[in-house]
Length: 164
Ligand code: HEM
Image 1 (cartoon, rainbow, N blue to C red):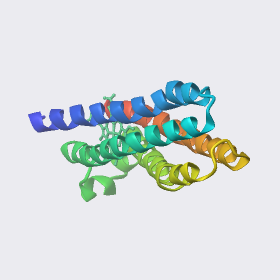
Image 2 (cartoon, rainbow, N blue to C red):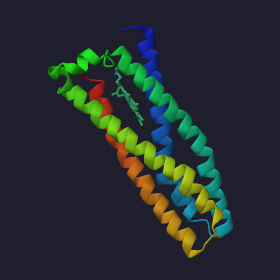
Image 3 (cartoon, rainbow, N blue to C red):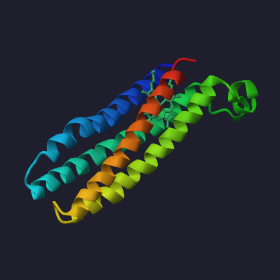
């Protein structure tokens, strides 16, 4: 395998680390700490700034994951239409892991886009500490949970992809 393939996988894994690590850090450490801030305006501002900052980092790493993911497939020869026409390959465990991974990536992208570009900015505009703000926070954390589950499915499928 060429060195560029190893470079692509390394960047892919590092980006996954930034993306998933950041997401789990926010959910397990950042959000509980911020929820304990008593002043509602300050709490909302901190949530807003943290979300805004991670949004750029997160989408940058997602972009890199998509580009290096396709490069990984290319180096593995899995972008060839002839290979997918062969039932032995198309029905193999490897191909199934790839299909599962791509479905989970699509779910994660849709949920994340809604969470980051619609829900987050909307939550920043409502009155801090109001019932509306509370309802939005609950909705945002439900979406974040779906995204985290999709992230775990992606890693499980990725481990299978790396071990044919
Ligand atoms: C279009 C999207 C993606 C494609 C096509 C893709 C494709 C791949 C491929 C083919 C491999 C195997 C590389 C090899 O060893 O030859 C791989 C590994 C990996 N992928 Fe992705 N990937 C995508 C998105 C993601 C995302 C969004 C994440 C995490 C959130 C992710 C996490 C990983 C990890 C952690 C590995 C390494 C697994 C290991 O070495 O055990 N991938 N990916």
